[in-house]
Structures are given as structure tokens and as C-alpha cells.
Image (cartoon, protein in one colour):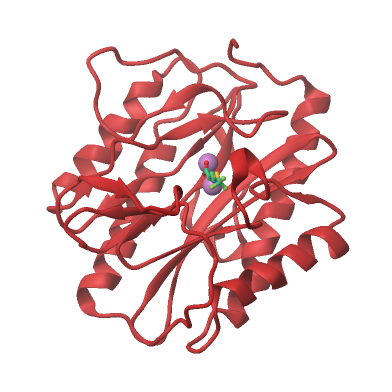
Length: 258
Ligand code: MF3
Ligand code: CO
Ligand code: CO
């Protein structure tokens, strides 16, 4: 399927879906504390999405995924399945929310600290968020999709971290995963030319150790092979005439853009 250029009406619906996804991450924040299980977090998000937002949690039954959000702890890279393990002081956890409203998807994730993180964990998490925003700064009409990954890889590797290559950002709209692919590293091809009306995610996964990952026997949870810590942040973006709009921006991030 080709890249979809969204119409003004579709863009308005993308804005609404993405705002709801961002609001799930804002809503869940006070619950993400030592002692809670990731199933409990899943259930609170699920009820909020279904009952309050009257939206659909996109991961649920997506290619057989069994829960409504993804929760990835410490050396888990992405696609962690919420379960009965209690979060404890010092953990870092990514919560990845995708909702469908009025036929359109909004996809976003952020990292949470449980209690006080180690200096190393805090640095990894902060550098990964900075890498996402360095990628976002590349997004404007006429730029190449490959500029995003080059900038992200350069930023992370200059700080002695590695970029996961097996998973990437993606076009998004009526479908969860559309074209184009947005990789988070430099490629020979340089990718496609960005045009106003394109919507896609940027969602770098950054490891403290080696870049290699594997999928656990549950068929979903991706972990670092060397068990090093991993962090991820994700936004859904719209390419505009001037540059881009971060459709999943949260209130706490409003100081991060110009
Ligand atoms: N939200 C993830 C992404 O950013 C995809 C999760 S697929 C699931 O693309 F099935 F694991 F939920
Ligand atoms: Co995504
Ligand atoms: Co996501």
C-alpha cells in the first residue's frame, strides 16, 4: 500500500485520536508507582479508553496481542505484555498506548521511573527522549525520512548507546502500521521525501549495551540479548507546510518545542 496523504478532514480526526492517546499517558501517571502490577495499569487504561474516551485500544487482539497496552520493563525493549509482576523502586517502564477513535489511530509511549532511578537509568531515559526530539526536528516538507534516523543514531551513539534496528516507526492513520517505515539509524538509501499531510511515528529504542535483541517465548516481549537496560519514547507526527505538528504532545512537554 502506498503512503497516504491525509485530507484536512482526516487530519482533524488524527488530531483527536492522538490527543486521546496522549491523555491516556497523562491519566495513568499517578498510578505508576512501586507495588502496582502492569496488569493493573493495563486494566485502568483499558477502562479509561473504552468507557471515558469511548475509543478502542488498538493492541488488543492485534495479530493476537492479548492486552490493551504494551508495558516494557528494564531490559525489555518493546511489546511487553502486561502481567502480574509488581513494579519496584529503581525500575524503568515504557507504557505504549495506541487508541482508535472515529476510524483513526493515535500511537505514543513514554518512560516512567519507579521511585528514584539509578544515574545510569536516568541518563539512558533522558538521552532517548532527546534522541526522539532530535529526530522530530528533522521533519519538514522536502526532507528525507532517512534524515530522521541518521540524526537519532548520531545523537545516541555519540553518548555510547546503541539503536535497535529490528523495529521502527511507521506511517499511521486508518491502519495501525502504514507506509512509510521510519528507521532510527542511517541507511544507504536515504528513504522517501516528506510531504505535507503525511502522518507517521518516530519511536527510537535505545540500549545501554549492545544493540542485539530477541523475542521471548511468549511471542511478543522483545528484550536485549545482553540484558542491558533499554528505553523508548514515541510520538505520532503530522508533516505540515512549515515543519511538523506533534499530534501526541503532552502538557509536560510543551516546553520542548518551539
Ligand atoms: N504500539 C506499538 C508501536 O508503536 C505496536 C504494538 S503492537 C502490539 O508500533 F500488538 F504489541 F500491541
Ligand atoms: Co508505533
Ligand atoms: Co506504540
